[in-house]
Length: 355
Picture 1: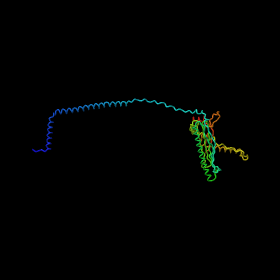
Picture 2: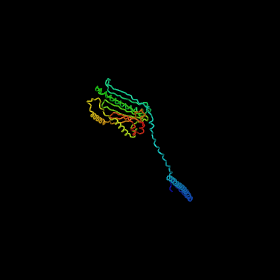
Picture 3: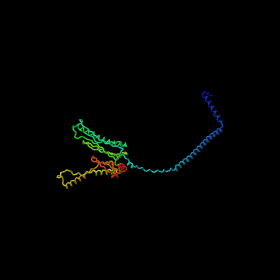
Picture 4: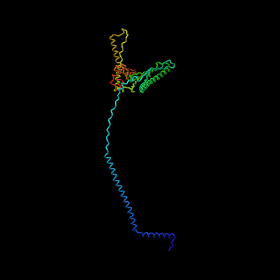
């Protein structure tokens, strides 16, 4: 025999042991082992079947309930509950403002107008030569029941006065410069400002005029007009007074033009009879003068209407107004009975004129 080395001997012994163990395992009862494995498989299969049936039941239950909810919602949408139709409330009729009571209010003593004269002059440095002058009237409203209206009128009047004062300062400075350059002044410059007012106790109308003379480049005439209802503060113009503002203005302009036609010039008296024409010739001359005068008319460019002046005669069934007309920088005026123009007035216009 060969002599085995140590390591090889150990390996041989291990192999022998493993063979012995395998032979022992082969003696196990394979029938009982197979039966045990079969029971274990059936146990797993039964559990799987039970869980699968529970899952199916849950799914079927969900599928059965879901269509029921869908059906209920579909039915609710298909037949909504009708809402009642609201009944509209009737639209209220607009309320009319009645101005008739205004005509019974006496405002004669609720405001006061003050007009004062003033004068100012500019001289050369030696106070010997007059260079420019500024004079006229100033107007202020005081003691008015409606202070807002009083302040409004005074602001307009003061603004116009300031404009006239500015014109005076301008021409006075030019006159002073001319005098310093030439040592002489041919015509002193002058600015005149004037305020005239008309009232019927309720409405106050103010006519404002200033005129610049002396320096040709600055010669001008500026005219403005303002009229206020002292009761309500209404700024009065043709639109606020009339149902036909343009027609009312044209009618007043035509009436003023007709009243301002130039009258025939009379034949001068005191002419010696020897030099006077014969009667027939005199009549012909008068007819020519009348024809020439009749053809000469004043064209009114701008017209204003002012209630008043007041009348103390209560027996007269008349309401007066003053028409102001402007032609070529000259102001003309005439007092009329406003009843003749009543067809043009609206209700407010009739109330402020007192008709």
